Image (cartoon, rainbow, N blue to C red; front, side, top):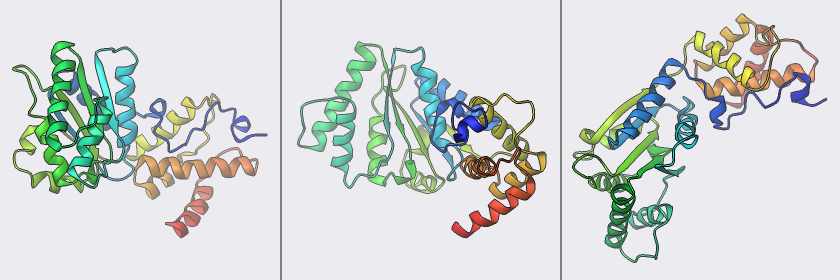
Length: 274
């Protein structure tokens, strides 16, 4: 019998993929999502969300995309998953290609001018809102940040033409501070913190329900949830990873629930690899 069928699940509940349907709206994540959406709709320009590894930034970005894609046609979203580019020209060339601009340009000045024309056409002539989401923002170099700062200069009397959302780890902050006039361009600054113990339990139950679990009895005892929180310190990625291991274990051994003792054994094994 398969892993999912054994627990009467329709989906994998503890995948670490950024599926927006498994985006648990903790108080912090819910606030971040709402504020990002408002900033984009008001065309405020630059929004930055920072957080340690595994706090849910990538899943937050997918939830943001979903919030607009389900009903909006006046928003044009572009995404950069890994902004690791070797040169200023390479970064600008990628942006040009991402925006669907042609033909090929030979100089950085040509790329900048083409991008400015693209913004004017989409935002002013067609009254669209252009949004650029950059994940793994801590990989942005200072020259790349300077380019983005320049792109934010393109504006009408009422609004910024580019809506830029950067999600990155905390190490991005000191780099931003080195760039003159960058901090004061940020319309939204937000730092994602880990979940507390209560929200850790809520995340586990939410993911199980989203995966189709309907039984009244919880698969995780209260003590097991506490052990998960103590080990993961509320980081969503770590929570899903150890919970996946626990579910796999009870399925393989015909167990009925995840207990504190089971979690302790799995955690000791996990520590060997980390």
